[in-house]
Amino acid sequence: MVDVLNENRFCHSKAHNLGRVIYQHTQDLAASTLICKNSCSQGCIHGVLMEMFETEQSNLNKSIDDHKSVADLSSPLRQKIGRMCETSEITRYSSIGNCYHSIGHGLAILASYHMPDALKLCDVFKGYGSGALYYCATGVYMERDIAFGKDDMKKLSQELYPCDTDAYPVACYRYKMRRLFSLPKEYEKAQETCLSLDGMQRKGCFHGLGFGAYAMVYKNPDDLNLLCGKGDAEDKRIC
Image 1: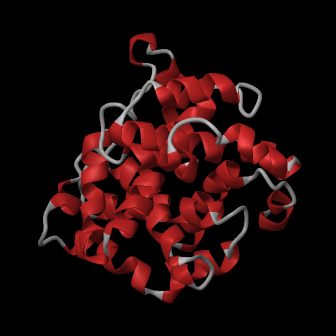
Image 2: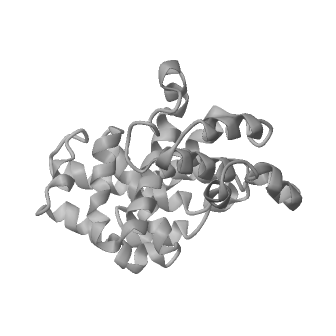
Image 3: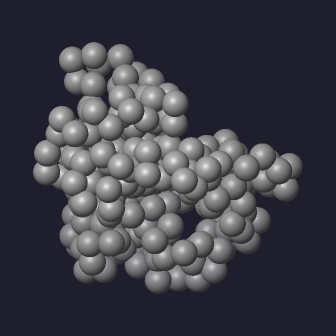
């Protein structure tokens, strides 16, 4: 199943479900990641971690809505999650940054997709620096986008939600810009939205533009000047 799914280079999200099924059957992290390896851009491993976190929470006889076991600084589950990227079961097939990202997916589920709580759970990686927190946040936001991206877009009065309300907006805009605009076709409209923002919102928006419209530059490298040509020097750099 992994091999067949991996034939499609856009299989990342679908591989989440396969990873969950694999862990359901093995109940073992090392065995599950050995099956997944780096298939579908580590999407399979992301699913393994999602299912593992839900299983761990259930074993503690807690509702999935109750994530106090991770928020509690002294809890064994929090300490276990905080050390997971130090183990070869995940990083053997994935970069350290993608490990933090993978765990972010699981934390979003543990927090029942409540963004402030889920992002706060990324604090388990505070001791590893801002990069670890950022990668964890990208996992939280990506999981939110997969599960509720279409629903979030229906909140017309909050077009930029949840990027305009929650922490780590740069991590959020990676996925939001592709929802807001048909990229790369509507890149000029996206640029105007970014130029209307300021601070970290603006940085996040230009980053999301570059991330969401990369195919434009992939097909024609000279289009980089069109895609990332608006704004000041920092806007262009982050795009």
